Image 1 (cartoon, chains in turn red, blue, cyan, orange):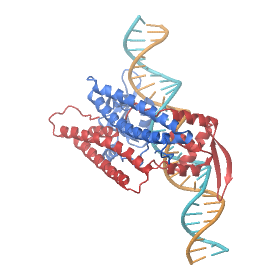
Image 2: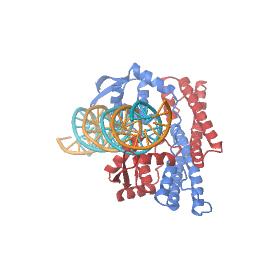
Image 3: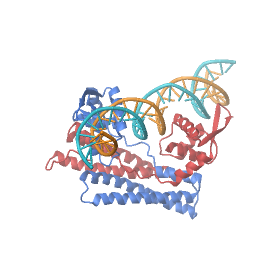
Length: 184
Length: 184
DNA sequence: GCATCACTATTCACTATGTGTATAGTGACG
DNA sequence: CGTCACTATACACATAGTGAATAGTGATGC
């Protein structure tokens, strides 16, 4: 439960309530997908059920009740273990483009697959340009620049693969050598 | 439901039963995580409920009953739509290492974060060596070589980021300039 | 003075996806 | 002829995330 660990991480600094946690999260982890409120409360409930956090008090400050949570010792221990462990570099690496292109070949023909790959490349290039723009804009805060760097590096890795796949499928389409219906 | 689409893709070629689909999947999509049998049957049930596939017959060949499914017209249409659409290049790119390093800074100090980053880099390098070995082994089938290529490209992107982050955090640790507790 | 709006804060029912275990039939092997 | 490996499925469960509803407060306009 990685979202859980993130919330626990934010709680490490002191007690907070759900609404506040959502705000803190979105502010600190720019570039990551914003948390939905619903998810915050759902996750807090699950953490509480596991005994990693506990509700300390119900405050009332200018508005509706707020339930303040804080880390328990068990929570702090679990969090420490999580921080100490590496994110296991996925033993299985799903290549969604290869998967889809392969299915395009199963469903249709090389043309369908190649049409998909070109569309995908175009979409990637668009996103790439967007991140590049963000990155070169001098008013972009450093944290967002770094998020963009990460995104660009991975988009670039995808693009390389897409190019190779397109080359291979084009070779299939002008078939000097046709031996495989699987480009993964 | 991407697993659903993959199964439908495999069904596009003709009727099959669950057990067979699992085998076909794992064989065709090497490098991807193998499907659990449970998931295959669960997904088939869900696809049937949506009207995308239907059970055509219950065979019996040397063993227990097998239920053969085939695509319906609705299923074929949905599959075609899925193949035609690009995988939207995630508008939000989660950087799990940045997240964890940031939380390490919240929970502990720069030392904890830097310890984590070094461990993570080591784990990535290990995996990298493994893929490289697979790739250079002449007996590795082409499909696995390509899967390895994709994996390596992304591991490499991660490693670049990890290096940068380590540089930054080391600079923090020998603090000439300390202004941020957030390296994301 | 009151309608309405924006903001704070939470709840709940629901969907989607995946897991783990139990069950059951068949042939092969010693 | 017991048990082992393989084929095949079902079912209850866990986990993560979604979307709409509810409710309190203060500010703003008229």
